[in-house]
Length: 474
Ligand SMILES: NC(=O)C1=CN([C@@H]2O[C@H](COP(=O)(O)OP(=O)(O)OC[C@H]3O[C@@H](n4cnc5c(N)ncnc54)[C@H](OP(=O)(O)O)[C@@H]3O)[C@@H](O)[C@H]2O)C=CC1
Ligand SMILES: O=C(CO)[C@H](O)[C@H](O)COP(=O)(O)O
Image (cartoon, rainbow, N blue to C red; front, side):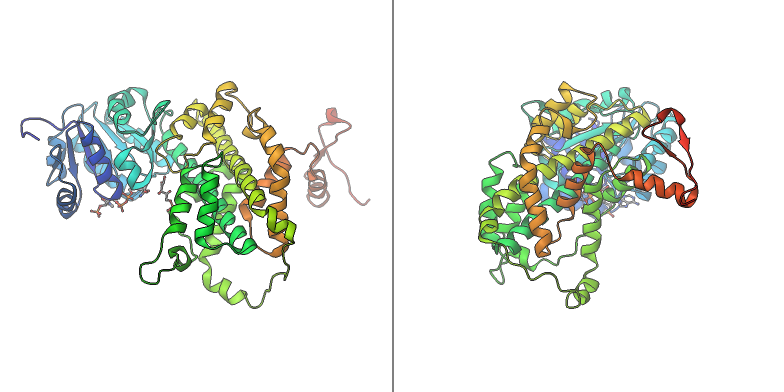
């Protein structure tokens, strides 16, 4: 880059995502200034990927000075205190009309607070969800920006240039005010957790139920990937199952310790869903499954004490289990997306974000981790009925769920009978069964509450009476 020209975009934080995004932006013809608190990070990035349109800067002051006005600064640093520290450091260096973008996985209420903090100084603040991992950031992520529309307009050309593209355009859309973008990215990750757990349960049912080894499983899942169950996470699963350990020649997945980690977005999704009173049992079950998996020592100690059932599958069950599991995977996945969309709908109402669910489905069709074929009918469902109360009752999905439910029940039944845990398959099925049940047993719950705590209840036969109390047992 010529010394005289200003940089059109700044990226602070040259970690996995920041370096990839900077390269992506430069590839699209924008001059990019980069900064990291450790200058070796910049040197390493130049050494590995040297790019004429990327300019490393030795200090935050130099970084800001190299930027054209209005300055556009994208933070790609660890979520939490690091973002606050960067905002504190940048505010005195920036001028009115400049834009800070936080593209990490930040908590949406922090984003609301930071936007207010910046607004008081005349600086725009955008909370930008980015999905696609390192590869997506480098070659085309899905981008979920939230904040003031005027601020979004200042960065829109760059985001539209670097985002993944599908037949429906670049995978970026203005999501809504303040924390809307980060909220949507958080729920995206919640859905990601549930879908990953469904794939883990699929793997377990097929390997323990049918005795399939990694290669045979990969072959089977490859067939599924060509059909309606196709998705990025399914492709990732196939890739993982095919990988061999160079030292032993064994499938590498068989050597990976069964303890799943997490960085917090799944937990936040469940916490905020409880606050908004939106049931998301599939996502909650996937979070619990990760936590239970991390209790490895306890599980190992419990295994010899708590023997499961010694039951064999019948020949008929063995013949049909793969086909049943395919349908169970698709149907349960629909239910997890339905829960995520419902949560976004509730937050959109609560915070007046006016989020367009069909647009989210459009930008999730490419670039992001939860991209899946089912997003095409899902988008159409919300296009036809933007206020659809729940995806499971849409014309597109209700008949499919009805058709696939018998196979899904078989999978949950067989797995339960032989003792294979299927928390998300079963939580999703219970959600669907609850949602379609006009008369739930919570009449008993209400009666119990009134019986021990005088919490009152309503009568079916006399709704006009309002809340009443009974002296139960008297
Ligand atoms: N990895 C992924 O697949 C995805 C990650 N994200 C989110 O993107 C963000 C970055 O993730 P990722 O790139 O993977 O993480 P990395 O750990 O690779 O990079 C983190 C970056 O933050 C910098 N940093 C940390 N603390 C501070 C601080 N106090 N002040 C200034 N800079 C600091 C680090 O600098 P240094 O290394 O020099 O210490 C580094 O440049 C996170 O919020 C993450 O959740 C979003 C989508 C996908
Ligand atoms: O944001 C991402 C993808 O979109 C992260 O890669 C993913 O969420 C990692 O989360 P966790 O470490 O909790 O599994």
